[in-house]
Amino acid sequence: MAAAEEGRLVCLKCDCLLEYENTSLSYLGHKLSDRFLKCPKCKQVYIPEEAAIGRMAKVEESLEDK
Image 1 (cartoon, rainbow, N blue to C red):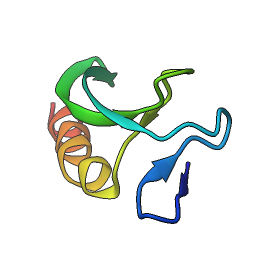
Image 2 (cartoon, one colour):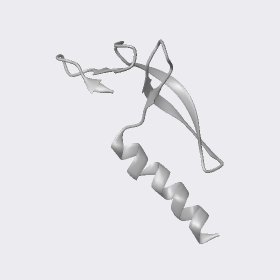
Image 3 (cartoon, rainbow, N blue to C red):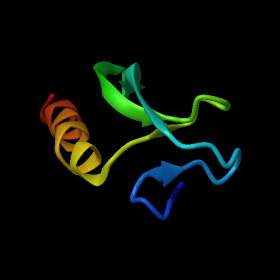
Image 4 (cartoon, rainbow, N blue to C red):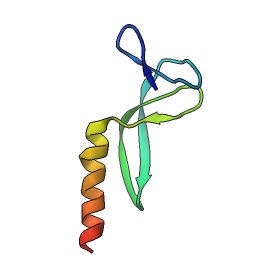
């Protein structure tokens, strides 16, 4: 993914602007649903740093505690 001139993200593979879409992700057996940026052509999802560090890290921590 790359930043376009106007500040929007572009898929490097398809050269399409990413669009927000309701997306369900599975991470270590746990499901996460939210609106993420996604390429309308190849469907690759952009996961922002705050989601990866925040919510996904909490899933990892909860699994480590078990």
